[in-house]
Image (cartoon, rainbow, N blue to C red; front, side, top):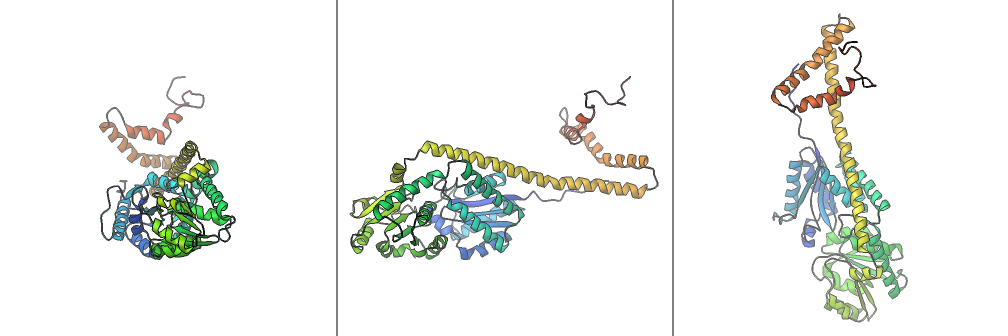
Length: 438
């Protein structure tokens, strides 16, 4: 019986297409940002353009389309086109947009969940963001079994990293150093009013840490009303925009700079006016943005206390070598989980081949029984063996004629049917009936 032609498509695969703080500026990511209200339309476009399953990861550090696609090339083209549409059709700079698939995509997702791809390695906010993204995708029906499994494995990988490495200790030590300095100025945080600039991950980490220690009054400022509202929802805070910053600074005891736009959002003149309006009530500015959000000359103003990451490093006395070692340990865990995940995917894919072979053999058995139902068992099984071996024998003979010294198909056949294991008995001697003399 001639084999049926193979009309199956290339294997489906995981795909990631996006831009991050490593490849683009903050201003460009602001334009790419997908607001909560826009997600359904973008997800629909992804599904119509080649993604069978999809989620959108849109944070201050990255805008990525992550999914599972039967045609990864089509999915890649669709995702890139959608990103360009958000720029009004502008082309990206070289290497601004990356596209990953297969194990590279899996490893990337695991690393994001483990905070190894964050601007501040070890921050915890991104894991919560991914879990929210996962829940939203499930509610709108764009999360299939494969993508759900990938994200669940990413969450368990992140837990493994945080449990078994010191990668999360660096940001926490900086947050504790900042908390100590703020308390030295204000005492308890219950009556302190905080202003967060930009939804940066390090700023979010600091804010969450201060919240755990009594901070209650928070306003989040963003470059647009949409960005500010999105960040404010995440932190259960009020929202404002950079245009309204002068008024917001007059009301803020604690200013957390986390935008990193490359421009001075808080100027010396702006801060001088705010201090005057506050009647010299002190202000603590914690600038954790890279590049800085606040002008360095602000340190010359009275009643203003400006700390940046370098200042916190000195206070925390962090050991950079220890951080690097912890990050290396974390990457090893991510790689191990990525390998295990891909092995599982390969085994599940091969399960369909095993099923096809079994069905093929069952079909041949049914044909033999239908054609020779009156034959005894020995005759029926002989006919079945002949039929089962007919096509493999033809392929092996053709391979022997065409392959020269190295016959990969013959080697594969010996491995598939364990021929090198079955031609000897357990004690290493040829089995009885092998044709050797007694």
